[in-house]
Image (tube, rainbow over all chains, first blue to last red; front, side):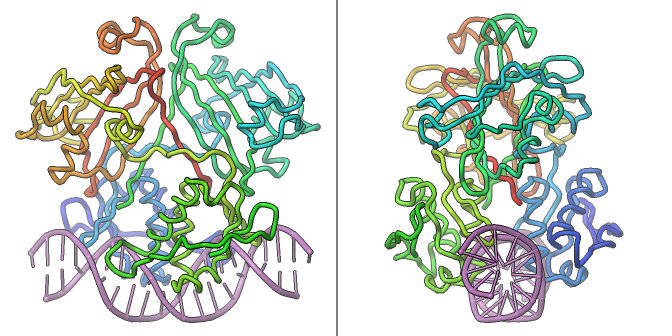
Length: 258
Length: 258
DNA sequence: CAGTGGTCTAGACCACAGA
DNA sequence: CTGTGGTCTAGACCACTGA
């Protein structure tokens, strides 16, 4: 692949796609997209760099044009590339930031080098109330698991996590939640989130929250309410979370498809 | 198209795609996606409904399988459909909510039936400081436009919007900003956002903000910092916004691609 | 005008789920 | 096993940009 610098006609040599594997390493479009993403994030393809056109690029990599297009589209969706018809494709300006994924606070913290710990405040099995049945799309009286946890990083409290899950999860213990986080514990049971609807807002910290988070009563709290669904479309989890705003925020990259 | 109810084999008749136009009404995959989305959002396709398989569906609509796949994928990305290999495609459970788009507060409010008004607190042309140049990826001393606005809906203050834009925008007046909102004013000048990076957090309201938003000093404020880029990858706008959390929140739908 | 990305086709083979 | 979605091909034509 060749890249043209922002000015015009400087060409950048390229070993980026040396090891594309036809078999066994996942789809080709993802292999290409991953390599491109890594090159953009670590600066090998700086902001403004022009990407080689689709047709010759496909020929060079010995793949079809729809495949290379799909790889490029992935990066457009991530907000890393910008395409213009009749012109070409460029790396977007501005610092690139990690987007909000369908991820857990636990993983977020680990990825940013913190050491997350969890104190389980409540782990209770019960029957769904009317409100819980409504948010989880289940019947009143079905078994649910109620959780309340205090998540800290490097010893500083970050968030209070209240969750309700359909089902009893008989094997789930406080120890497991403390070590792995909820999402990994569910993943180990074959339950994977596919879609989540989230509402992000703010409110004042109430008395008990303030104590747990070590802030004063009435100080601002960043809140997130989320319902997550699995691949069958069934609700898997509902959470109401409160974050210390001096220790956490949400990053979102938004792309407008033309 | 035929739909199977959650139970199993009830078929739902379908006039959904009666008016697909080959020419002039935008791409086919978007026409199909729009009709599907409308049917899901207004309840004609309730949660759990099974969508007809891709291959026969493509034949029925007389389009190719990649095209119908692309339409379905749009709805998967919106979090409205869920696909499972070897099984099929279903409408996701749970209430569907409007996702966060690359949109403006002005449009958000109008769409939800409010009557947004804007008071321009500052409209100032100047030269970029070091910090402004950094966030906008321009040179120190280039012309910038600085804005500060108070946005209200139905007479209640909602947010304080501070923005910096590269360029002077000589024709931009307070009146235009009050009537149309910033994004539409830019759109009228041929400037369109393509990508935005946003950080959502919370903090306590300072004195002047509290007065303008009619809340008490120290009460929680929902904050959003955004840098938006156009199709050429250049920064177009940077904003630091503070919202009254009792009047506004962010909705995000997140999808995990398998 | 030439060159770019945007859309679309008509197939093919594969991986996976479930009976 | 059958049927599903997941991936990929090798073309085609179109819409738009900028010289």
